[in-house]
Length: 561
Ligand SMILES: Cc1ncc(C[n+]2csc(CCOP(=O)(O)OP(=O)(O)O)c2C)c(N)n1
Ligand SMILES: [Mg+2]
Image (cartoon, rainbow, N blue to C red; front, side, top):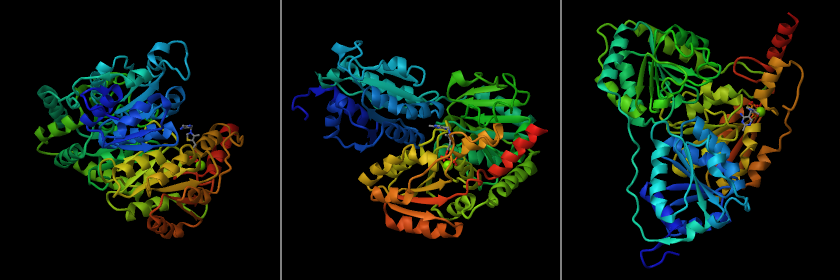
């Protein structure tokens, strides 16, 4: 309870700082280590989502950071809570997402004795977080929290971990709040933009690649205008599909895992690559095979908000240290050449993309996941959000769902399984009026399926579509490629997912034929409950392009040949 004088506990100061910095939602699993913070939430207008496992809570916070560009906030208890939260922290790291994780800590007087659940957070999260620290002095709560917001959002965004010694949280102090944080925008200089103009004027086959974070709806719209004026082909990199409208005539597609070979060829043949926001990591660079390292032969312009990323892997011909939002705004000043030589090529690129994604590929079995994705793409409301974790099922999302607006796809570039359900819950918490659909694998789903209890608690009618193939399919696919016929640790025996949904007071339905999916989806929507639609997927239907049997046969043939 708050005192009548102007003294506040450090925990109250902490929660007030969150409000000052514009936080509306926090995600947590409670712990006795930070009871004082839970108590401070009691009197403040902040929405608290209490979760079933810290991995889920941290992924929810990460999803908020991804969708809004402002730090997602997570509270967890000491050692076991913090280590459970680590996958969310790792995702924020790899996906360049702003996030702040507050962790309980043992009392200051017993530190370094390996007291109950004690961890040295600076050491444990030192390389995973952008900054890991501990608050010793209640008088410094405003300062450290302010720095956390700036650190999480500035340059290349990332996760910050702050440990809160239990006795520190209950100390009373009289001090003012910090001013609200503002992310630092880094603007490209005039000389850089002039150089970019020159490179564009000299180019014959340019292409733009979008990725990373620090985007906004306005920035995406500015890039779209630029692409139109320059008739420039634009592609997105792994799991950043919602940065560019798939149906825009300049959209050249998605450069992720298993991309359209025509897009790959186009990128390889281009003489000017403008990479904005992303790092061109292992997935979009096709295992670092697209461009020479460190000196690409093609002319590379790399725009990134983190100075340390420029030249880290690729030495760009033109490095521009700018946040995508600021860079996109600066594009308005560039003038296209009188004659655009690549105009026809852009038309072909878009036509190639449409042809690649238009129709579901034939698949063994009675339920075609590609066809389900095509149906969802044609029938979901324009502002629907799609989330997913990792597994081969996601290849169908990337290939067939055409993302059309900013932050419509919330998925981990880090390839972390179990992300889709928590991300969907977080999106439904933020945007209760929008349709939120999670596409999951059977393995993927059960890594955080327990958060259906959280969906039930807050009446969040998310819809999860589980592609149930009875396999850790991705791993089986790699197994068949490298060790054909030698199945090891990739088979699954699943629960009854319909009964699972019902056990959480949700709606469950099983679909055994593609044609039954629309009615099942409608029933799930009409239930207004957290829903699961289980799709019976033939294990042979392992990817949009090849069956498991074909992959095995090829591997066996290669071995004998
Ligand atoms: C947390 C985590 N653990 C393990 C992996 C390795 N992994 C990648 S995909 C995959 C199998 C996914 O299975 P499922 O969700 O059923 O999808 P499927 O490939 O069968 O479509 C595994 C185990 C991972 N990416 N993340
Ligand atoms: Mg599976």
